[in-house]
Amino acid sequence: MEKFALALLFAVAAAAPASAAELPPRKAGLWEMKTTVSSGRTITMQQCVDAKTDETIQASAAASAQHDCSKRDVQKSGNTITIDSVCSMAGKPRAAHTVITGSFDSAYVMTITREAEDASSRVINIEAKWLGPCAADQKPGDTIMPNGTKMNVLEMKRPGGAGAPGAPAAPPQH
Image 1 (cartoon, helix red, strand yellow):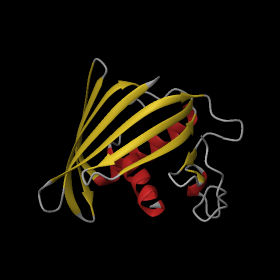
Image 2 (cartoon, helix red, strand yellow):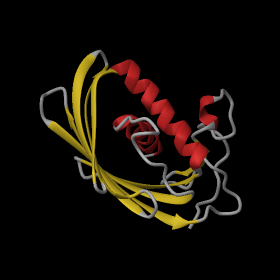
Image 3 (tube, rainbow, N blue to C red):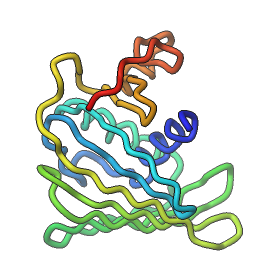
Image 4 (cartoon, rainbow, N blue to C red):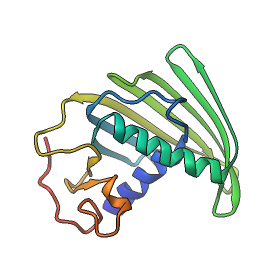
């Protein structure tokens, strides 16, 4: 389950790549993200963010999109953002349609419909809600996985970083 959750965390981060100018930053604090995939599998993670963390995550996704995507069209209307993209995955182009509704201050829903290799659709639905301030022992970037393991998505980029997989697990946060 942990490998699935980690893979899903990175897939979701890159699923709707947009620059910081295209997506507003999430409100600083602790966010819960309930992710459901087409198969019905659901995982729930929590992430402590601040403005810099969101900017870094979005910049990383945008850099990947700039390199891997031949098309990205972003439209805003009220509290809805729609992103249509065509990106290369494993050397093959894949289309994705992403709809984000709600508020980045309290709760939003992101639905990503991606074309699969067999031309069927795969859907990832993310329900995110702001829970309040981060706990005293959390820092921006800390992500609590479904099994209670804490890793820091910002430190994972550094070899041997404290939040890297294999680092000591933190007790579950409730």
